[in-house]
Length: 192
Image 1 (cartoon, rainbow, N blue to C red):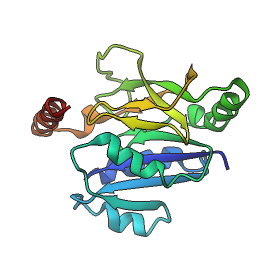
Image 2: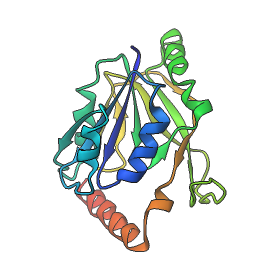
Image 3: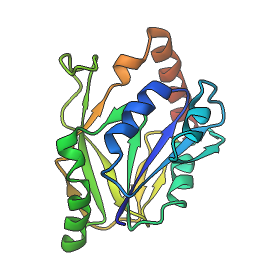
C-alpha cells in the first residue's frame, strides 16, 4: 500500500463516476468526501460501490474540507483529484512509480500538469495557460492552507511530475453554473 486517491464532490455524480473509473486499480484506496448539500444520488450510488466515502459540511473553506480527508489516509502518499477530472490510463499506470521515485529522491510533493477540455472526446481544449501545474501527489503529512485556491504546506522538496490531469469542468457546467461558481470563488477570496 503506497497511495490513496482523495476526491471531493458536490452534486457531480456523472463526472465522479468517470473520475473514479480512471483511478480504480491504480491506487490502493479511494476516499470520496461528499458535501452534505449533495442531493443528486451520489451517496446512494457510493453505498453500492465499496468506495470509502464520508459526508462533510462545507464551511466555505476548501483547505479545511481537504484536510479532513487527509486524516483518513492510511498510506504514505495521497493524491488529490477533483470529481470533474480524470487520469488517462497511461498516466494512471505510473502513479505508484511516481510515489516510489519520490521516496528515492526525498520528494515530499509532486506538481502535476492539468489540461482543460470543453468536450469529453478531448478535441476542444480551453485556452488556459498550459501547463497549469498544481500540487497533487503528496506525502500524508502534507496539509492545505487557504479558504480557496488552497496551497500545500508541510513540504520541503518538490518535484514536477508529468502525470497529466484531464479537467472537464467546462463540459459539465452551464453558463448559470459558471456564474454561480465564480461568484462563490469571489466571495471566498474576499474572506481570506
